Amino acid sequence: MTSRRKFLAYTGVGAVAAAVSQAVAGASPETAAKTSDSKLLATGNTAFVPVRTLNGWTLPYKLKNGVKEFHLVAEEVEHEFAPGSVAKCWGYNGSTPGPTIEAVEGDRVRILVTNCLKEHTTIHWHGILLPSGMDGVGGLSQPHIGPDETFAYEFTLKQHGTHMYHPHADEMTQMAVGMMGMFIIHPRKGEAVPVDRDYCFLTHNWALHPGTYRPDPSVMVDFDLWTFNSKVFPAIDPVVARSGERVRVRMGNLSMWNHPIHMHGVQFQVTGSDGGRWPRSQWRPETTEIIGVGQTRDIEFIAEPGDWAFHCHMAHHTMNAMGHEIPNTLGVDQTEIDREIRKMLPDFLAMGRYGMAEHQEHVDRGHHTGPENTLAMMTGKGPYGNIEMGGMFTTVKVRDNLKRGDYRDPGWYRPPSGTLASRVSSDPDFGNPQRHKPG
Ligand SMILES: [Cu+2]
Image 1 (cartoon, helix red, strand yellow):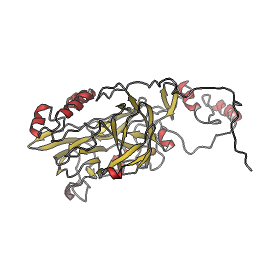
Image 2 (cartoon, protein in one colour):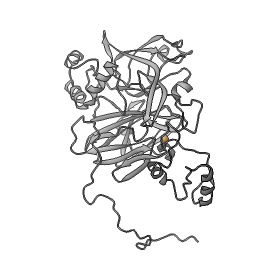
Image 3 (tube, protein in one colour):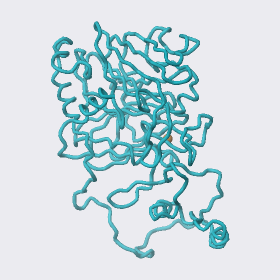
Image 4 (cartoon, protein in one colour):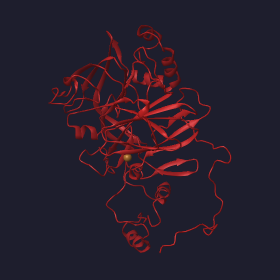
């Protein structure tokens, strides 16, 4: 735990990590190891910007006779999705997702896996080319790792790209409760188009039923929480950058749905996947990219000043716990039924006649306390009011005056004068807009 805190404190001043990484550019592995803390930073012959795991952390390693040795511990963790919702989840080394493993193409890695669960597990290195016996499929490629046992995986990284790790034993349960992580491999020869910031996260879905504390692995469709790195808005870190920087966001999907991830403000380029960074001729401009189940995708963009929404475009994936099997109240006058129900349930409040935006206002006013340990369906405050989001939503915050490697939340954007949408009338009959006349 001490080393993890130390490490977090270290990366907390992200500038330091980035600066040291740049300082080792072109250095031999030996000098690189001397110039920095070799347990924490890459010691290959290539400089790279260390990947930044949203709301997460990177696993330190020990260099042992030229082998980078990592140690993962599969265990139960107490996890907070956002203030007001905690759960007994499973993860690695105290967190869900587990820490990001970061290495360089050509590295020899050894990954010790200690199982502190009460049932057996394994780890599959998703998308990584390795000997069959290291592939981590319990029963097929290896014996299971029993409770209290430690297994060693060891292989040489023959590729680069955005990869993932997850159990391949009782997968349905172990993944549903949070066991997963990212495995980032940087190219040995560096990148022709270098990035200034390199973010990563995993998308996931959870059935944490209202009022409960353990995710339900049997649910297949109606999930309650949709997360980036096991967090929901507004607890998801913003993606922070300085204007003009090249930013990469690496996204992986180990959930049960596809996620069309949409970014405002730019056309990003889709530049890579589990297959590594694609040749430039295959990059394509998009504003939404589907991250299919079991896939990873890298997007890159040049940061534009502002506060930009960054979210899954499945509208229910930007909400928290909500009922699905309910009658449609849109356009329904519920005055009578409201009165009748309140005789039995004094706190009852009919809603939804004119839309659901009022939900967040009512929650804010304390009208709906809801079950314990359960987040409101929509939440979040911006500089201009309620954001009415939850789940897979965060912001890209770009400012002109940020220092390189400063990842701190810069607060809300102040648009230059003349660039903010504003009220010009409160009269519904304002102006003379054209309307379509049926028939
Ligand atoms: Cu989605």
